[in-house]
Length: 121
Image (tube, rainbow, N blue to C red; front, side, top):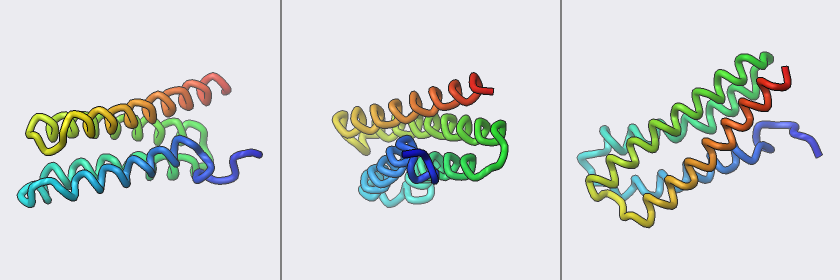
């Protein structure tokens, strides 16, 4: 069965699952972080599946690759912000490790997609 929608992409599905996990985690951040770190982390993570979907919807391979690269950049942004949250003790090491592993897996998948697309030209 082929890919008929961005929703069929495993990487998009994994990114959507991580969005949910991130929202659940940040729900417990201090209220004074609502417009700071909480907002930054959520925006970075929401950007990942959003850019995968937007790139998929473009009629250009170069645009698709560009949006996948933006998703990778957003994951790096998320990882940095998660590190800050961990350092501030907003999450424990177990949660941090699990979320970081999910993020790294999505990053590897996106990098592999970019490589495959670029080599298929």
